[in-house]
Length: 494
Image: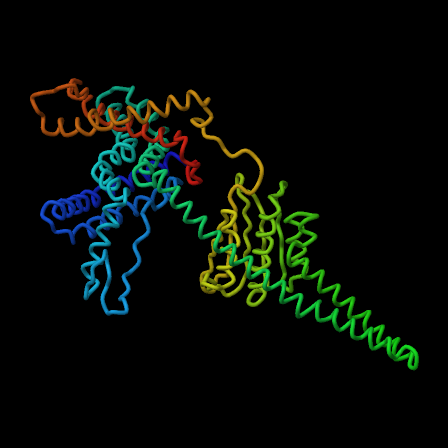
């Protein structure tokens, strides 16, 4: 049941506070000592400790909540290389060893990365927000049961029921709050997309050049050589036609057979560029044709009514062809499943081979990954030793149709912009002064109550008010993230 799973995941995530708080104290102390006392060598280990905890949170949220939080860090600077004069050159200076310039480069890497300071804020605030949103529903359920059976307040049972059904929403809001602080900014996403597109463009240029070389080689060694031989055979037949018609006829028969063979090779070459069955019948029938030509026992299940764009079809077709060719060396049975997931095209190829397959640079699987990358496609391979191989191809936004629209994104544009501005401009008010600062005020009980709402509430309602304010602020922050007009839709956000 979704609510029970959410309560269990929330308890597990909130239990990490026991580890997170000591790690946060050590990391914050390391950052303070490195900046105040000048012990700069402590900064990088402290930041790495924070990033380690953030990585655990990203993995748990992706696995349990379904919200993918991409890694926002800038690329690590490459290692220094000793120059020809035997020194390491850095910022116009020469060093005998790489230790000093390495520390300087690592410091610049972590200090100039916005993710470093956002994660520092996260590790300070997260124990409170995590406790409220992840552990809060379980606490409220227990409180409602206690009020019902110990105090005789039967409305406590209704409180427990409401908290039970709101547990998935609370956990989702915590995940979106974590996405705001642990995910990449819009600027970081744009830089990453530019770098990725540059890499994809370079890979596709290399791939196209390799395809052209293959076509030229096949034409030169196959059809072109046969056509030259046909011309020479016909020339010889012309010389024999007057005094040896029988020999000339035999040469013409041979020339006709060679021309037929050349025509067959040209057709095979055309099928290697873009198979006619793929253009005429679509991806499902084209893969069935591949299965008929394969020496393996292949079963094809196609549940695909719409056709993707022709370049996508071609890339997926040749990827499946490559996977079948790999399976023919080791396996005897193959199952191919073609389906859609939303607007994504998914093809799963499973065989009964010995397993152990993995992508290596320059190998066939790496070539498939490069071919699919041009269309935002990915290849996932599961190949345990002795357990067969399952390769899953998924191309995002490959099929027509409306993507699933979240309710908040279905709002009219004007209202959506207004709600976005209100959430981002006011989320700090319940989250920080009325939530986190009130927490410290309740702990230390100062005489001045100031304008903090929780301090003016009756004692039984003070801590619930603080928890409500933190949950409200995190929910507003999460809503602002989901309504962000400058960010692309994250596939991990449901």
